[in-house]
Length: 255
Image 1: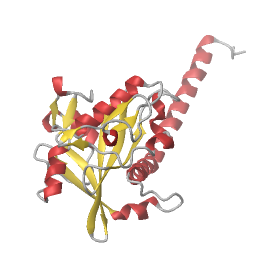
Image 2: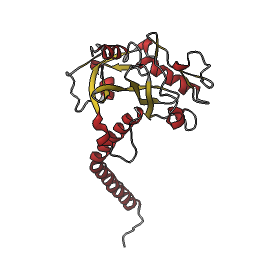
Image 3: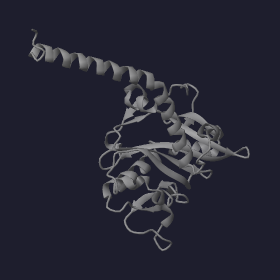
Image 4: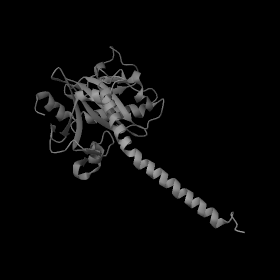
């Protein structure tokens, strides 16, 4: 009589089970990938609208996103470009490619190592006139790179909103970048003061008596390094290596 409990038979059953499970998981991943890609794109659009204060819960994100015009900006010239196709554009891949990005070295205030030469920006029009611009931003906090969107009003200085859609900061501390109450204090703040990037997070409560209150935002309680990371990433992306020349060109109509 065959020994069903022999080591070779046990190993055969285990290996067969592993192969079957691997095939099931791989098949599921392949089948679900198109849906995942669609959901990821939809989530990105929702975050773009939310940053600008335009997301209406319960309504179609795709329909709401029709008010958004997407364009590619050459960060070296500060102007729109048609040389890069919108379809299939992946800003993260562009940033990792040495042929389409620059190494930052000592200028790496946001701790991102490389800055892409091209960025995807989002424009909002109201009654046929430019109303807002939404810019992708990122930078390192305490534990992770924070990815988000900064929306500016038509004066290209006043913050319309700021939101982070991907990060790995500590829940209850740096993770409070997701807190609606904290995000609600950003609209109305100003990025520049006499042309210099002045926005920053500061300890304590910012009120009307705080010097240069328009350029200051309450830091996250108990999250000094995450707060510093948010300040640094905004100073980088709003500066010379980021969107400053683009915003200047957009303001003057030369973008």
